Image (cartoon, rainbow, N blue to C red; front, side, top):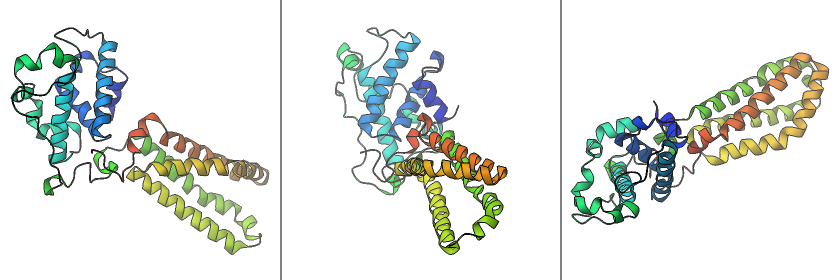
Length: 287
């Protein structure tokens, strides 16, 4: 199961209870931390665990169920390791390297057992009574140069399938411009201002190619730009499509296919599966 699938199954509560292990908890914490700031990751983890427990019938008892201090401690430990050593290609690869996080007894390095298992610690965060929790380094060093604070979102996250599919559809839509021009070339050649028309077409193609390549960087404004251009061009596009069907059935079908591919691609960019990819990659992710 890849990271995206693991996170999806946790959030839609389809992850079997027997697979909701300590490592599965840590993987969710890691995946939230490479997507969101630490406070938002904590809130998502807190709400997500409580919702998952309720959906799976896990009772909240004095010795079982959601534990606030445990949740915050493990998130802090993962956060510190992530800032110090940087992310890995996958969550499993990260925890294979950070084996100290896989030991469920690690919090007892900072807490006495009585304090950690107290009712107060279960319902709200209590500070450790042995030694303070570790903190990430205040400044980046060579070891932290590749952490999510200095890397773009696309470098630390696997590209969701919905984004990959959107890119393929947009490239295919753009490629259909070539046979469409070939079919309509006699009519285009007979029109006035041919040079100006080709200049506009060239600029449009270059701009579209640049936008599609920028999707890999995870910029939110890219998908917004695609949506705005789609809405603005929809009336003229429909009129051109009707005209193309009147001139040539093949040309009309090519225009229709391009429109369907473009609309589907933009819709995929705004789907729930694509949402984590489109953060503000130019800002720190973990401050």
